[in-house]
Amino acid sequence: MARQTKMTIGAINIKIHPHTPQTYIELFNDVIKLKRRASLRGDIYGHLSSFSFLNRDETLGFKGFIYKYLNIDPNEPWFDVDEEKVVDKEQMLQVEVLKKVKPHFSHFMYLFIPKYHRFFFTTYYDKKSISPSSVERFLKGVFYHPDILEKYGEVDVIVEPSIDGLEKIFKIPTLERLELLITKPNPDDHDEAEQKLLQRLGRLKAKRLKEEYVAESRSSIEPDDELRTLSRIAASNGYVWASGKDLEGKAVQESTTEHPYEEPVWYASDENPDRIFVAGAQGMMETIKR
Image (cartoon, rainbow, N blue to C red):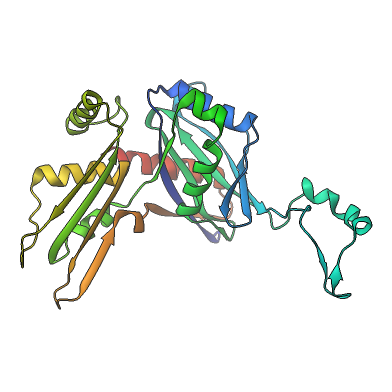
């Protein structure tokens, strides 16, 4: 029996307005042509590889890699630990290669589905890991460029939350405060409730909606269907944050941002990990669409 290997997949919602699947394809093409690099965490940087489409229908998705590495600045002073002195200019010529060669390299697969503007990526693969929050920070960085902003406007990047994250909020025994932030949903892939919200934000010329609910003294907020629907929209298009008390009266806080949607996938060592990743990401997309 072939040995089983674990892979974990995360998801991010990427939004631009107005948009079409082709616009998202152009966005990624432009970012790659600009050779955008951005921080994942501190001096750990990354960039996106060129991509290939899954098939002739480009809207079904394209795949590539996130390259991750330590970004050492060769222009900063270097220290010789044996001699206990700063390295002189002549010696620094030996490290010029660090301007284009980076240490501590690893890579993670990504799949973007233009029709639903979801970016899937391996958070654990080949014994290497990367957090959804790091990829969120990285994508915000690569999209923050004058040429990108001029052509596409601000690009929203939101980690897709787990379904359990929202349920944990509504299961707080005494729900004292609830805060919702919603960035404008995209117009062509949502249910009736999201369409109505989109239309309302459009009429108001508003990009974001923020609402706060505070319980009456010694009471708990009792969410109705409308609030639950609005919270579901916020979870994928912003965040939902709540505070209250548990059954013992202790203060608790929950946020959808603390519960990213990640799906573990197991596969045999003789299987193609690329195919396993694509199939896993497509399965997650079906779950998000429900």
